[in-house]
Image 1 (cartoon, rainbow, N blue to C red):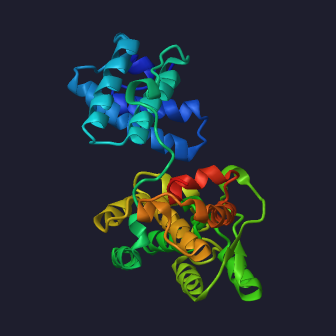
Image 2: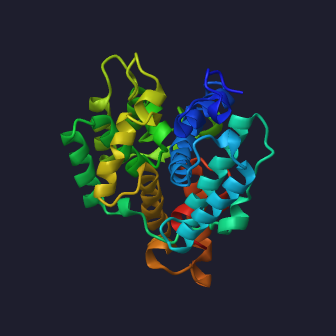
Image 3: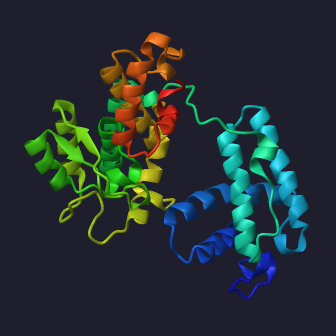
Amino acid sequence: MGKYASARNFGFGKNLDYAGREALRAYYADGHFGSVAAHGDRWNQFAQWAKAEGIKDLSKADQQATAERYAQHVAARVQAQDIGIQYGQNLISTVNVTLAALRGDDQIRVSPSAVVGERSQVRTVAPGALDRERVNQATAALRDAGMPRAAAVLALARDFGVRREEAVKADLDRWRREADRYERINVQEGTKGGRDAPRWIPVGVLQRETLGSAMTARPVGSRNLISPHETYAQVAIARDSELNVARAILHAHGIPGYHDARAAYACERYRTLAGREAPVVTGERPGVEQRQSDAAARAVITQELGHGRTEVVSSYLGGR
């Protein structure tokens, strides 16, 4: 039960969007900022749909029937190719999670895959950030808009293959020392699941330039892109954070997000290691005579991207 005087929406507030976000914060005990932000943004779409359906107080509605109707609405958007299968599944998953947070139980649930279908983990569209001129124009536009850290994160993702959090939290001083000493850097800060296995990324002239630009973009008194008085969430997760506000500029330049730049790094590394374009670029799977070099390239890229299974890199490179 919520903590507010109004009994509407299980006591979390009169406004359904607000109530869901408050319930999520309580559900995650004021932690997991990324999960709360992602679910919160997707819950907003449900709240808008519910409002159009005349639902103001979810606690007085048939929640199972409501969730199922919304799932069919999402399925229709997927079928119309308005959104992808993966995003459709995420929208439905968010309703499951947020209803559990609001109700205090998990009795209401809709199967995302049963409604919108199974999603494919194989990339079929070449990343927009593979075009370096497009990335250069986007980073210049971000700097002109007063968002140098967003520009740095985009460039670091493109040239080092790092995730958004890894780019923001990277100890840039250590990176510089390692680049000078070893001509490669070891990604350690902000890794998924706190993984600390060695993850060395080669450093060439281009990477040195990108690293230098990132160091000029960092706040005074910090080794990374987070100011001493800020949190990671304030820089990258909050709705009005620099990295989220910057997404509009990325989209305007044909770059879906920072992760797209990471996929572009993988495709470029594949070209270097295998001697040909990645399958997602050519639209063709490797032939029999190419399978050995394909497997070798994927093994290296898997390690550089910080994954544990080679199969995962199909979501960057395309099928094998």
